[in-house]
Length: 273
Ligand SMILES: Nc1ncnc2c1ncn2[C@@H]1O[C@H](COP(=O)(O)OP(=O)(O)OP(=O)(O)O)[C@@H](O)[C@H]1O
Ligand SMILES: O=c1ccn([C@@H]2O[C@H](COP(=O)(O)O)[C@@H](O)[C@H]2O)c(=O)[nH]1
Image (cartoon, rainbow, N blue to C red; front, side, top):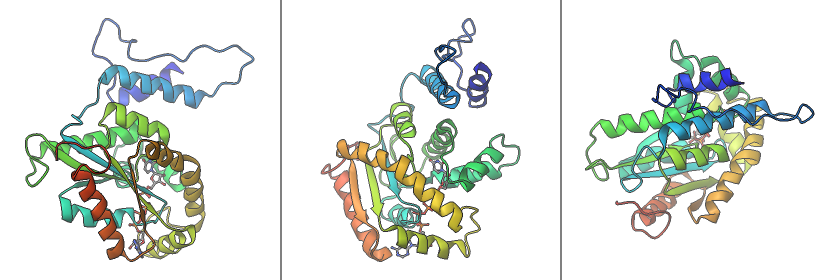
């Protein structure tokens, strides 16, 4: 077990830099009695999360300067389409977790390539450490680019994080260790409509998961694992729900209104914008 944890932490450069206690960054799972069933994957994930907490101590980005909006909704609801429009309206940096994972999957020499391919084809959620690190790196790159325009002065930045968090562990890890999110834009429509849109997109997208078998698995994971994330943020009054059944332009108008309300301090968690 220790070797799995160390491998993850090593690969992501997460160990503490205190050479005298090299083991300190990695929490070993609590030993269990012989007779108790063990969930080794959960133990490894928890230990890796603890290692990351120990390495980071606090969130990487200043939540008073960086605005993070999560964009959620079922597969094919139109998240990517709407993000592209909102980038033009508000100068967001649009980061799609799925796109970042596909880029890592195809990066020559990536040690995660095959693992990511399998998870995506099966519609499963890639272990959070990989996705959170990819997002953190992409955010840092954008902030270091020295962008100009509204919301990007004096170390500030604004991000639409599309298709993330898909699972509660990712949500907690990102909010605690990368940056506290301000709002969730939640696009809803029927499964029938999403299936129709995805099968149409699959005619040209080249995506390995735009086929009926993968789509059904993605719907299942969405209901089981992502809906609890929406419920969690709803309890914090951070969800703006938008009916995505309408035309792209109508949905865009509603999404634009929600973002304007966030920046006006009427909904969500206000940053400095
Ligand atoms: N309001 C809409 N009406 C009709 N078609 C739409 C609408 N919004 C998006 N589409 C189309 O549906 C398909 C899926 O949209 P999009 O890629 O934006 O979804 P997504 O939620 O990002 O999907 P995924 O989660 O699979 O990445 C695309 O082909 C897009 O052009
Ligand atoms: O946080 C995430 C986001 C995505 N995935 C995997 O990628 C695919 C495709 O995601 P899209 O948002 O539809 O591009 C998704 O089904 C997951 O397998 C992930 O693991 N974690």
